[in-house]
Image (cartoon, rainbow, N blue to C red; front, side, top):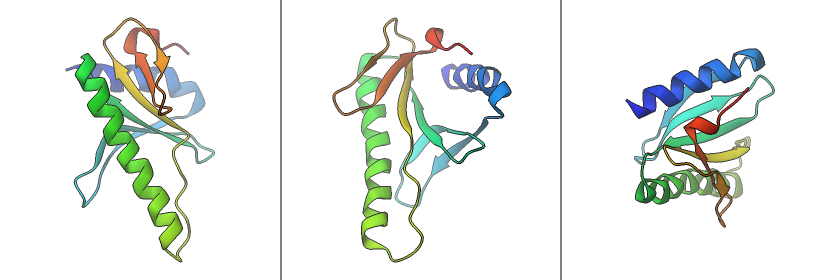
Length: 113
């Protein structure tokens, strides 16, 4: 239910920016609950987690995806993949902060236009 609230709020707050929402799941078992796409090609990977341990696990998932993209860009001769602009864990908490690894922990209640 929390994931659905996050999707609803993100859709509402990004409607003016023509944001698009999808999810991500790859053959390695990595996934992101939400991928927020903007028209200019930028995107954010987002995990939705209610509790404190969930934040740690969600951030770990997002970092694994980012690292996989970086590995691909280093090792492959094909066109490089764009890295996410933001890694975000949406939470049910009360305080927004940036972790030392760069992942943003943002309470759902803090989202605004």
